Length: 180
Image (cartoon, rainbow, N blue to C red):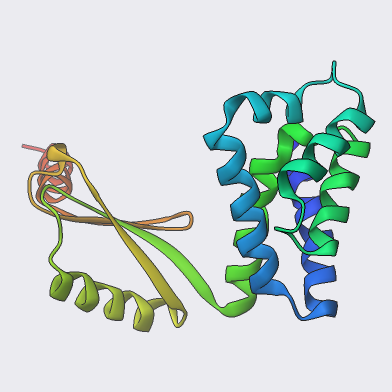
């Protein structure tokens, strides 16, 4: 249910962004809003709380973000508060970012390795993933000592396991299939 709500609001925001030619601006602004709310947890609690009247929330948001957001983003925040969806703001941001990336042909990928990838290695992997997916790949690197060696890549719901651990598991599975 929460994913459906956040998707609906993110799609509505994206439609306005396309009409106004402000896709990147809205992405920057919604990131700014969520980061500000994260930095000031008491403000975030007010934003999410069903106990605070909507008009009070609007006044607080107006004070905090006055002059820092576009008219459209201010209106969007008011709609969120009117509909009592303040607790969904972060999910809406993630969904909006996904829609923007999809629109631009960008896919996010995570390379999980035992040690950090060097800049050169990261660029080589990113280029290979770009040619494989035929989309622009934004690659981040996460460290996990359990990987031992190699790289585990996650792109959306796909996983490419090029780790030593993964290969050993494949060998183990293959050996267990052998009937003696």
